[in-house]
Length: 316
Image (cartoon, rainbow, N blue to C red; front, side, top):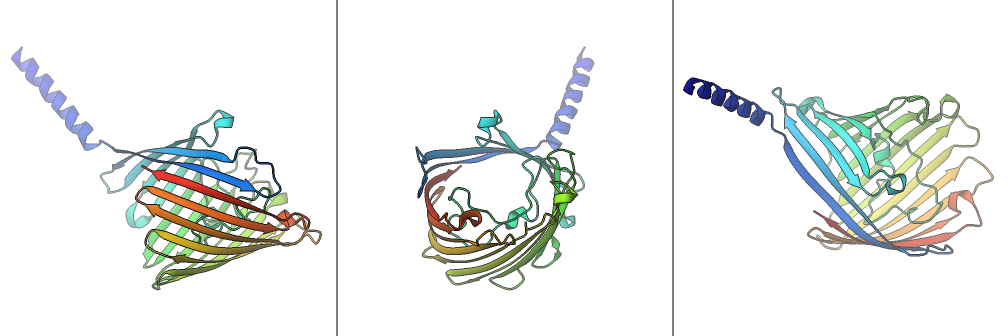
């Protein structure tokens, strides 16, 4: 009987050791915000709103040194669709070989991260105005791949993404890539390109994106240009943006941003946007405010409007 007990305890101890060796590191992070927004010439009703999200992640290091992380985001973005489980990803960190991420939902691409990288204390110049055209970019998708590597050369990061076809929402597969260089103090230079075939080859769009930002003391300036060349006739768009931000203190920043979208369609007028933003942080608390004015919204010469937003945010 004593021998059986010893065998049982030995087996249990071995099992516990095995589980401990492969135990994952679990973490929970999140945030919440309260906003008030309004817009000229628009009936917005109750301008108050909130947003919140909680991110659950589990990571474990493999015997070969790779780190595997599974992430699930819970938020209220899709309550109307009866879905509160949002982005879920599986990330494989291979060290100097780069990081490969598979996104079951909420995937991103190399170009989607570059929609407007000009420095701002709050929102982009075209945001918070209903129907205003955003920068042409290739969005992400479900069940997609994303790769990044910053170990090939000092100061250089490469990124690539692949969105496979599903025959319906993504009619044909799309891919893009980007490169960023930060090897000079204060200077960041980047470029990206890709082909969006989500609507099929008959409506394919080629995107190219180039930008530069430079930080000196409390000032940061940036310039960006994006070209969107579509197979569809008269559907090309050219986007340019410039921004400057000033750090008043370690906790407070202000910025001025301008952008323009030039439409190939001669019946559309160039959309021009100007935005002013300010932000203040105190620990996990942040306060942001912005006021944006957009002329010729989405190319309509008779539609000029402004919008504003004030947001109180918390992280935990």
